[in-house]
Image 1: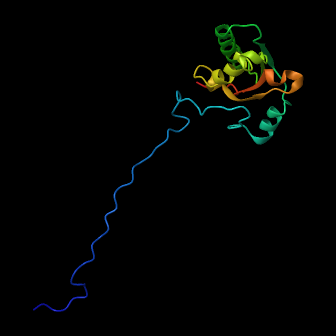
Image 2: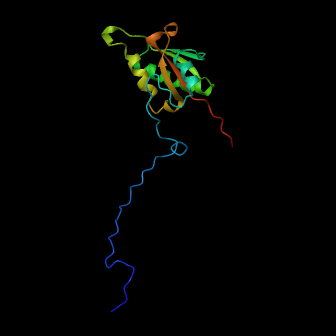
Length: 156
């Protein structure tokens, strides 16, 4: 017989833990072509609180204006995209886009409904930090303030 041991005669079974799946999210610096989260009127993601409050209250200087009144949907979409690119290239920060209120028979206006959707599309979404309805003096429900991202100078 062998001498008594300090070990138990039967070892307790070890618990086998399955490996956890690795979930990764792309870092903002790497996902250059990934579309940022969709914007909604009044959102302030990526904006400091003071700037967001000034923007939402219509207290930022309007550096450019675009009036879409009387344009077809296609022409207005093209004009908006060109306007936002030009404003960004010129370093504008806050711009006003006048859509008009539309008539009641149109359910509030085609452009008024479409412009927020267009601001979320891939061709200009990377330029826009946010949008919010304008104050009455600037067009009220028939206009939007659009906050444009700062232009980054490339070094190299």
